[in-house]
Length: 443
Image 1 (spheres, rainbow, N blue to C red):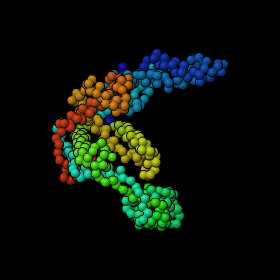
Image 2 (cartoon, helix red, strand yellow):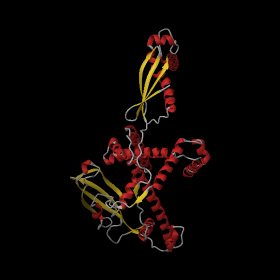
Image 3 (cartoon, rainbow, N blue to C red):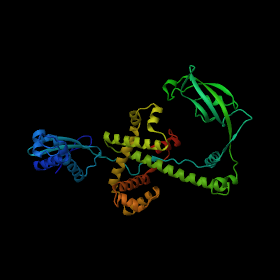
Image 4 (tube, rainbow, N blue to C red):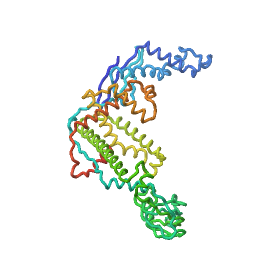
């Protein structure tokens, strides 16, 4: 039977022991596992008797595997019996091994206790962005630009808005620098995708014209040797293309949508914008409510939980960037960060996430929130749609009572309950509504 001792900073000591008979049995198991590596004169490799191994090598040679065989199941059983919510790897301290057996202690970090403050009826700012003719027209204009074409221009110089195809090569103090050369490069003038001043100086030149451009690299440029440095670029224009935006009429609407008239398209865009604005406002409000409830709670968060969350966030970021074809190592090199810098920058948000999750769990427990069988079934159905698979496949994978899925349902119900009970307030005067919404969404 394990003895549980609560220590400071959410640590728990699990004190265990085993009798000599059990320890000897574990030694024999360790011997059978490793006997092929023991050699004693007069015996073939793997045929050395147990007692002779102990005599020649000492039983300590078997301790590591024997201890693992004893500790692992005993630890798992102690965690289960005492309902410990462990968040760290156990640290093993073997206190004694003698004729009576083995005494040992496993020290782990567990989820901390949360002292809730007010959580029902908290005040939280609410902002819903306005949907208007201007926002609808902006979406329609974006549709026109997405369906624009590029037509060759030969009778005038390049101007802002044109896309030019150029060769270029950069020099600092008369010497070409690495990464400063490109051939047949497409550049949209006015896109601000090049060094400040570059695109402006390309404008005004004609096809086949060769010319030099003087620029100064920004102080925050990613290449250390070019920060704040003056440079000259030799440029040649091969092609100039002008963007042609289609006329806004019913024919355009038929080409790009399922609708027949411009009025129908506008009505659909307005409806979608209203739904998106409602959802974004609700999501941001929920985040703010959770943040307010978390601020009113008291909890000492172990460093290991923040460390774990940072690792999760770093993995999530790396995965998102990989899907966009950007290796994390390349991003770090470009931004001049080390991996430690990258992860340290995530710690404040990791702290917010961990505390929020702990508080949500505590509120759910206080409310005795549960996931019904109907809600569990609905969750599997939604997952099946999202992953384009059958519900039966998910049931086979997760079972009928998966704790992670149930926890997901309970947490979602809890934050919805908190938001429904919360009091909506106007954004603070010193905090623009748009900024408030963006900040809430990030959280």
